[in-house]
Length: 111
Image (cartoon, rainbow, N blue to C red; front, side, top):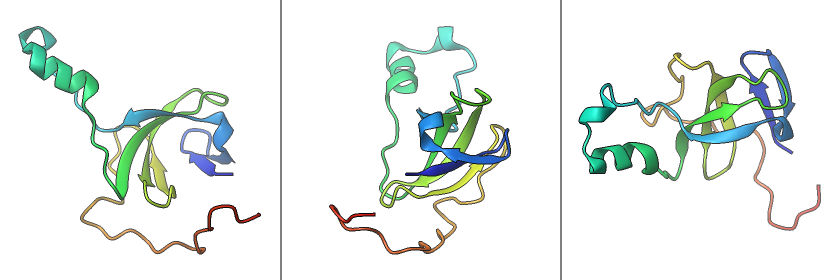
């Protein structure tokens, strides 16, 4: 089971209390009425799907109900950090990700 640190509650909680809400750091157009249909469609529907580090928006639905951002490695599913909306991530594509602390499990391996 994955455990996620909520930056608002200050606690490490079970992943079952959270909901991933998509890609983080997507700026809303300042004047949506001046956007073309293609620009508005890009804003609403098109997201990055990288292999490696990805910044995501999460919600602590069974706790404080606050939104926050998380940096997650999409290959290992490891969450490297969580931080409040408006803060900058510590880990970016330019900064090297830390080495995993444990070896990844093989499919079907019993815990």
